[in-house]
Length: 127
Image (cartoon, rainbow, N blue to C red; front, side):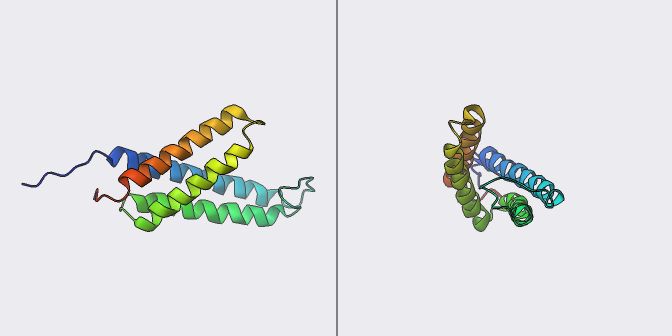
């Protein structure tokens, strides 16, 4: 009888759940932006086009939720997407470190843990 090494299943589950939570958060943020697209904003970040950013976050959120579910099926595209998005998240949160230190450190830590989970345990067959 063949035994299966399931030592990383918890890490993959953690990464998948974090991706789904981030995706749902992006969808909610995007819907908020779409709801307030007619309000004047004074921000360099959004470039006075809150509707475009709203659609971007809705679409990105849906992709992240789908990728999170795909991780449960050991999907390699979901693994690489998760690594890329988590790395981007860590870099972006570094820019906010001095403005929001606790929140930025929490987000950076979660992003690094997702990268660890997907890089170390993502290529094994857990199905």
